[in-house]
Length: 233
Ligand code: SF4
Image 1 (cartoon, protein in one colour):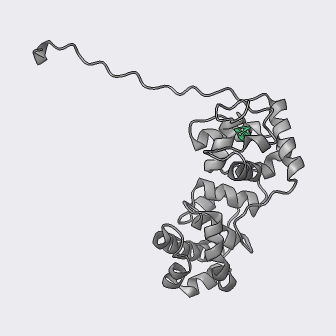
Image 2: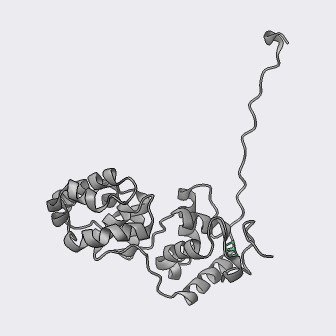
């Protein structure tokens, strides 16, 4: 066909993702009641000895496993548990300690820059506000949420891959992106469960509701779950 006579191409309609509805508040409360009954005091698995080492561990954990980070940070934190000591150690040595972790060169640079800023602007202390935390090198919203929650006891919802998956599968806070899920969790999680919600969701995702083969047969939420990913009737 003569190109000039071709009908104009119409753009393919954009694929729309329909999100499932969030659950009713009473069901969400029941989900967290079960998490709490099974594990009343959930803990993060990243090892740290104070707010500073927690911050560094979380910065190092991007695209790395907690176990891998712990292996590297145990000897590092034994000799450098303050910004001053980390700075005295220097970037080359920090890099040597963390070289088994992905992106270690950039992360070593960030850790040193972060220590410099903590000392110069925050008296060597980890700041307790989101704005100040997010001003630090290598610290984004998720890291700030983890530090605010664990070190300062705030109700924040750090959305990693596990939290994102579980919030969607269990319809606690369906969302297409991490920010949408985070906002959904802020609204949906009953206040009495807010402090630990992030840990329960991570642990559930890591050990039971795994990405590829969720272990539905031993899941404490199984009778409530109607996810298409569920592997039993
Ligand atoms: S029943 Fe299966 S898919 Fe549903 S929350 Fe439990 S482990 Fe995940």
